[in-house]
Structure formats: C-alpha cells, structure tokens
Length: 467
Image 1 (cartoon, rainbow, N blue to C red):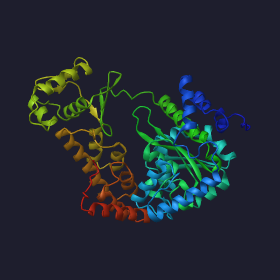
Image 2 (cartoon, helix red, strand yellow; image 1 turned 180 degrees about the horizontal axis):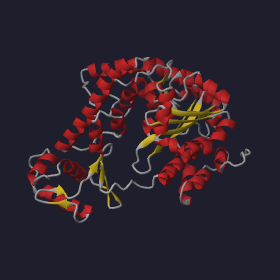
Image 3 (cartoon, rainbow, N blue to C red; image 1 turned 60 degrees about the vertical axis):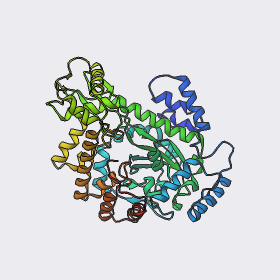
Image 4 (cartoon, helix red, strand yellow; image 1 turned 45 degrees about the vertical axis):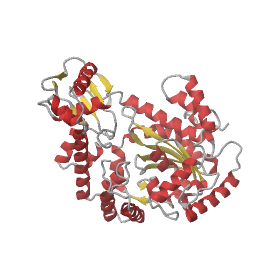
C-alpha cells in the first residue's frame, strides 16, 4: 500500500484498496451490500480495459493491429471491446481523422467566465481533495469536462501537463467523441457511462500512448448530465480500480451537489420542468411529482392557456386518432386532479387555478428578449421528446426552431458548437453548416461534409434540431 499524504482522504488508496472506501467516506448512507456490489462490478465490468492477468504490452500490440485494420478496412477484429468498437464506428461516422487533433475553443476570459458559471465549479474543491495529490504524485492528470466534452479543468503533474499540452489536452479544448474520437471523457459523456480507454483503443493516434478513465456526473435533482471527471496518465491506470475510483468520485460529487442544493427554490408558486425529458416534473407545495406522459402533456398545454381549454380542444390537442372519444381525456383529467391534490385544476373549461411557471416559458422569454446565451443555457433538450400529441409536438418544434434560428443568426461558434454536439443537434445540418462557417476547423468541416453526404443519400432526409 502506498503512503497517503497527510490531511488527505482515504480515496488516494483506492488503486490498492477496495473502491468502496471512497463511497463510504464521501457518499451519504452506509449501504454495505451496495458497496460490495460496486467492488464486484468494478472487477468484472466489461467497461474496464484489461481483465485481471492480461499482459498490457501484448494487448497494446494487438490493439495497434486492430486499429490499423479498422482505419484501413473498416473491420473491427477481436479482442477489441464492444464499447470501443462502437465508439470507433461513431468516430468514423463523425468524420474524425485518426491523425487529427483537438481544437481549442475557449481561452482566457471566455474560458474563465464559462468555468465560473458551470455547475461543476462547485465541486472542483472536492475533485482536487479526492484526486489532486494522487494525480500529481502518480504523474497523472485530473481532468473535468462539460456535457459536450469540452475540457474545463486539467490539473496534475507538471511534466505530464506539458506532454498533454502537445496534443491539446488542455482547458478549453473540445474532446467530444465526435471531435477527437474514442477517449474516456468524450466517450463517457457520449454514452453516459463510466468508461476506461487503454492505449490504442483511442481513435486518434497521437493519444494512443495514454490511458484514461472517466465517469459522468449528473445533476442530483434533475438527472441532467453535467459533464465527466477523468484521470489520465500511463498504462498503470489500466487497472480495474482506476475506473472504480473515478466512478466513486463522480458519485461523491453528485452527493456534494445534492447537499449544496437540496431542493428547488421556493418561488411562491408551482413549477413545471418538461424540457429534455419524456415525463415532466411538477414542483408544488413542497412536493416534486414525476408525472405520467399524458399528464405531462396536459399540464404543458394548460400552462399555455390560462383561460383554459374545453374538452374538445384538449381532445384535438392530445390525440392524432380521431376515433378517440371525449371520455378518454376526461378520465385522464380526473386522475390528474387526484395527483395534483385539491384546488389546482378546475373544469368547464379545464384550467389551472394558480400560475404555473414552466421551463418552456423561461426559454421563450429569454429568446424574446434577445438573451440567446441564457436561453440556450435553460434548454436541456426538446420538449417531451417521446410525445406524439399534435399540440405538444408543435410547441416543441416552434421552441427548438426559434432557438436554432437565433443561434444561427448570432453566429457565435461556442453557442453553435454546444447545440451541434448535443444529442438533438448531432445531425442538424443547418447548425453544422453555420458552425463550420463560424469556426472552419478541419473537424467541423469534416463533420459537415459527412453529414451532407449522408443526407444526400437516397434514403437520407433532413434532420431538425428538435428531433
């Protein structure tokens, strides 16, 4: 066991000791079976790069041959892991070149302002406490990225930082999988899973001397992906416990965020969050209620019509099938009234008896005021994307199209990149075209060309940012 610097937590020993040490020290509760299960999962996890007993040098040689086979013929031979094979294919479809490099998108004051406002800034002291000395003493790097794979912080051993700088593994650089191919932080946010990437599993050749492990971090209240925490260094990190380490640190960060913001602020009235989720969340009277899909649609519609909607109007707004009878929405509304409690939902017409602030309205107000940056920041994704209710689909499309149009008109490359690299914008040709014009990097031009080629195929069709 290595010595631990005085004043530091037990987390630094996690590459030699059971990973549940970190969870026990920094996560609330004392669920021993859960911690034992985590340890077993780390040892047997298919997301780990090397199984126990594997020869790292031999695996590197095999992976180099596999990588060359893929870049030359598009085939993925064994023993390339499934998560890596899938990532290589996504990287190729995104137009990433194996000899490419990351682009630095934010520098100086822009980077500082963006980091200061990012939610993960609140847990950077925790990241440094848990990982900083381990990274420095082990000649590794601690890195934190946002939900789009943009590096926010890169810290650690001085000589390792200099080496990493030569491949643009620096704050402000975009390391999304769609920009530089398979890598732990970029792939972790792409698949929303903890992942370890070893040597030639990296898609870009200049990154292949490195090994990294990363885990996503979520907003504990909403589940929204905030980014990922990563440990990057040499082959010694190709150990099952390094993945468990970052996963435990990510969970500790989520616990810390929950303590810092235990609940939504009381604004004096109920609120509805319906963007970026299939089922809306209602906050009212100190309660947070996850609604059914149909109740989510109904409340979205009622927030838009303070004067109310008749039964026939709701029927047309909710159902494409003209054979649905008025009895169906009446039954849904009766159930919704039971969920909401007395007094909030009135009838004849159906209406809300108190103002209900929705995240849709927040984005719309900011757009109307020309505050494009804050409008995008308040937009975690399309409105109830699984909904097929005609009126809800129209509202969601208008909101997304309005935001996209504002982004394209603004021509701010950072804002365009945030949309283009989000799941709903990956195939948005208009935004990619605007991004390539505003920031004509090789990776952006390649992605635009690949996307345009896909859409020009006989079965291709234009994608909208609200899909």
